[in-house]
Length: 181
Image (cartoon, rainbow, N blue to C red):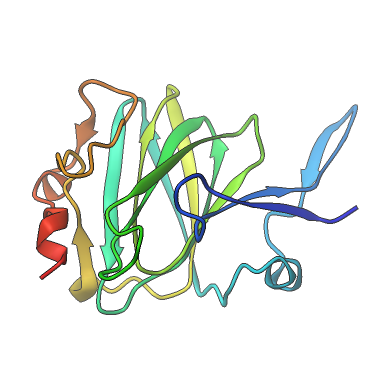
């Protein structure tokens, strides 16, 4: 049995949904969350150089974040709770520029999402609390950090919540139309 099932996300085929193999018994479960060899064989590029973890309460929306000119690819998953995870293609000239895809990630379903460099990323917490892991292909660079406005009408993202809790910095995000310039 293959250790990973990798599928293309709806709308954005470069975004990958990964289902690792899970071993369960009466004690609980075990799963390998990352193996450089297995992920490379499955077409998930690396190397990953930095891991991050966030913990947020229900209704917190983080994003839509990206780095430019030094972009990051991200491998993300939830270890506690559930989130609605969103990726937006922000690559000028791409045939899917400005399109987004979303997937629910939870600790009940051991799925991961790979978001390539050149995509903005964000999520909203659906459970009481969620702990979220990010593996990144480039180091965090404050000088390269940017955000798209989560509520950009040109994106029309369904965030699954009426009044999300958004940081002051994320409320100042730019608009998709400004990336085209």
